[in-house]
Image (cartoon, rainbow over all chains, first blue to last red; front, side):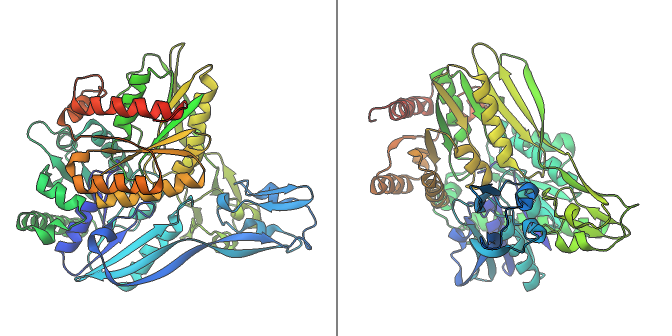
Length: 286
Length: 290
């Protein structure tokens, strides 16, 4: 069972929710798909970490074989190749590794070489398997890393898995939720929070995924995110209060469900609700 | 035109809150929202002119004509993005397709063509006083970096004889952030005093440094964790990066934003702190030391 946690806006509490639910579930997996800024491992501090480098394929030219026909240059939609001063130049940073230039070259002057763009790590924290993807700084796309993380976890287990998604609503988020059975949207009670909640709500609906909302940073008084959910009949899975104790634990990268009785109870009840919802959704809409 | 870009690495540290305050304080005549994935700046800047909207075309998407397709499977085997699937007929998934054109090139019967696809919408508010450029990426789309470049281009074309442009960036360190960094004069990083915030700050600093851009750092909600705030100040000293100030956690700030106001529109502690930061940043940007 795979549960994706997402939010649109950054800093609403995706990592807080996914880390604590995974910790509460005891035997579970946690996958950090926010490969640009991964933080879950800072909380779990996993042991026995195994690491694997992730590469993409970038073309390289053999100048002796290139006859300057420019077929590759004309083909490349990403402008990653140019023929300047009778020499083929390759811009690896903008290459999407589609392999088209290699297929098209009539002289077989192009071959592909691996280029490392980041890594995946796998470790254990109590009984939680912690998967982390880390994109190298300066690299544009972490999608190959996310694909690897999700495939790796699929091979390992079918236990309860929490996927911590990147912010936003672009391709990288879509990749992270593609195989999820259920989506948890984390919302904060601000104007920005609701605007971005609406965006990911539309995204999740587009993919026909069942979903529920966790309201984070709840204060007394009106909550615009709650209002949004009530108006659209969206299931509210739970509420996390705006609270200094939780803020302090979280900002020190401690797992509240493991450190505090109060939050152990809160996340344990949230986990039960989520499990029930997922069960319900998978039996009614298999 | 000097361009100031506001970034953070981690999301939700206060980029848009600080950008909107800077826009107000400088009475900026040009500003842009480069967080095309989740744009919010328009919610708080109060536009005074009618927007001009333009469709943004990303790369075209593959379409397979089932009448011409001979099911040779060449397209599926050569697609690196797992965008082609086969049930009864061959289909290209528009979300997975990156528009590289390999399938079109390898198809022996010309059954595949690349069709233009709208990947978002650009919006420009422009009158004699102000230029505000923003965009919204279509859900699930790629090529957000290209759209970010378009947002900045649109702003630059419309803003003539403008001294200062303020650009609100996106979280992360990947393609939209890299696109937003190109051509800017300075980056203000809004950090958050948490272990996560510090880790993310270090990664965005590394990214910005790769492009050789001047950096300044401030801390938002500094009083939520004084120990971590000190760590950030210490880090900046060690790296010889200008530390330009700290903003307290302020429930009035949330109230202002929820009412569509910037934090310098009302009298509040965070607004006062941001003013000081603003003055230091302007000194750094326009010369002299802060």
